[in-house]
Amino acid sequence: MLRFLMRRVLIALPTIILISIFVFALQKLLPGDPLLVLAGEERDPEVLEFLREKYRLNDPIPVQYLAWIGNALQGDLGTSLRTNQPVTELMAQKLPVTIQLATMSMIFALVIGIPTGILSAVKKGTVTDYVANVVALSGLSIPNFWLGIMLILLVSVKWQLLPASGYVPLSEDFWQSIRTMLMPSFVLGTALAATLMRHTRSAMLGVLSADYVRTARAKGLSERVVILKHSFRNALTPIVTLTALLFGELIAGAVLTEQIFTIPGFGKLVVDAVFNRDYAVVQGIVLVTAVGFIFMNLLADMMYFVLNPRLREQ
Image (cartoon, rainbow, N blue to C red; front, side, top):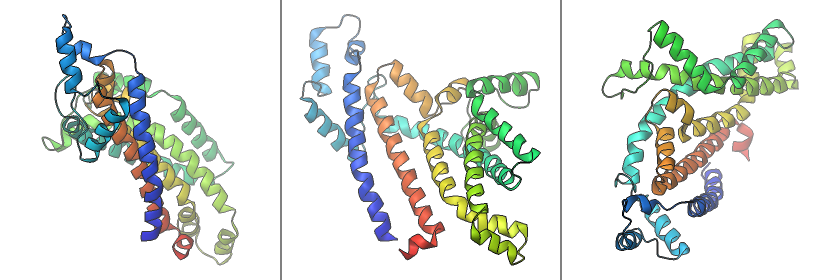
């Protein structure tokens, strides 16, 4: 397993380097000069020159990149041009919020999507299958922002069951924090559940027609054992891949959902940074997000190793 994991890490390292170059280069291509905002209305040339020296903007671009990536490897992603706070500190404040939202959304997606996908595959061609497919297509088609607004109008304004917006940390009030996160998690989870349902159905249909499944049924095993133990377990590989990618996408930040429900997560942070031309924050978030995606893929590869005996034998 160690050799298998090392091979995946060796593949991931060049990917991270290329992503860091891409992120840094794109930031340099963005229009506007953030230092003009910091310099104030007068924009004194001496102040501008001082700021350029302070942030090493007069150095050649390759030197700037090497300095930035060298500091990033030491955990220093720079300083926000707007608030003068370290980027790592800003991200540390927002990351628990985004992780909570992503985790709750993924729970909704798994609980709804996987059982529905299995049921749809087992009942292929029946009314249950058609209904499940219609619901899945609806979940993929309905925009998150529209569903979020409708839930706020019904659940919060009309029925007054859950808070319409805001966020309460888990450490302050556990149950109130869960209540504030239920609606945004459901909004994100339903879209992910639809995607999971479609992939689970497709994977299960491929497995249910396999010879070993027919053999298991011929041996007289119960349908429950055939479906859950013999079929679903062998269909897990694409589902694990998709789940890892979807969770990485959630960590990147659900921008519209966080804006609608006023959740101070990664999505809101990156939107504010883009509008304020706070390039250090944008660079830091994109880099950490990319590394998070790669880590989730690495985790999926490790799950393959656990789930697939043939891979362990190789």
